[in-house]
Amino acid sequence: MGLQDDLKKQVMARWELAADEVSTALQQTLAVAFLGSASAGKDSAIRALFGLDFGQVDPIPGSTDRIRVAPVDIDRRLLVINAPGFGDIRGEVDREARRALDQLDLAVYVLNCDGGATIDEKNDLDAIRALGRPTLVCLNKIDLIRPDQREDFVRQTRIQLGVKPEDTVVTAFDPLPALSDEPIGVEKVIGWIHKHLSDKGKDLLFAKNLRNKAAACETIIQDAAKKAALAGAIPVPGADITAVTVVQVKLISDIAAVHDKRIDKDLMLFIIGEALAGTSKGFIRYAVNALKAAGWIPGGQIVQVAISALGATVAGATTYGVGKAAVRFIQRGGDMTGDELREIFDREAFAWKNQNSPD
Picture (cartoon, rainbow, N blue to C red):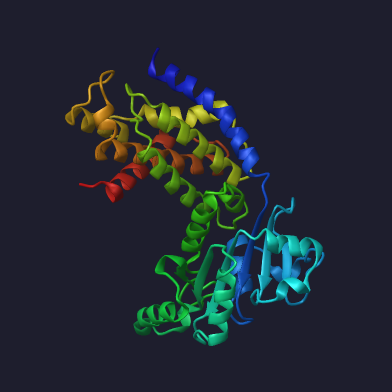
């Protein structure tokens, strides 16, 4: 059986399963709370992430002026909670709003850097964290702090609030026009939320409803590349590529779902098949030569190479390149030649390799 026949068999075996996994993931519900004082920038955070003007959407039944709960999507599967903090607020809402609070998945606490952290905000943040939900602190409006003072401000505020660096993101959801035309820190916020939702299988529902599709896909692709690097197989001609193909088929299915598309098996095979076809100066040719130099013989024993740093790099880079090519392919409505797809794949795969190679 040739490479293309083998690849086709593997893609066909995984395509339907991946489609079912995507469908199941999008049937879940997700509740995300944005908390903080009135001047912190909660509305701007919601708008930057979801493109939702919170002041123009009707809250769900049971919301009050103090806490508002609104759906992001038409199916009402992703609920956004906008409130100053929790405290005793559960007693102020009823029915659907209370259910959203009870089913809260994570919280984003937005702090206005311009005013600094107050003792009331510290107490409120402690009450939120006591719920046991993952909580991200956004130090917002960082553009209002002088550049030479920002590092010290961030460090001192983290200590004051008792927040770990990995649970803090510096942001400017509505920055000064002279500083940036786009919100600052959104990609890091997306990455943090994606990480904390992935164990629940709710990361795809979150990504699908994001305003910034490029940032949503980037997080998904990076995650898939890491999984492929740990998969223990080399995705190049003449190797057992099953484990990595599983990751790549699911990756492309997820990317299509983020863009509200459903990709059929022929397009799936085209994307992966054309990428792995390679060119004389492309990444696949580089990978084959590098693996042979490391002792890999096509069709022979590849276990030691597969689990090596080189094998992991090849798997990760190949998956990253496939993901980036798939994004462009889907955004262009499938209007892309094999040569165009391979050009994107090669460029992105080499970029990932250069950034992540242990060499």
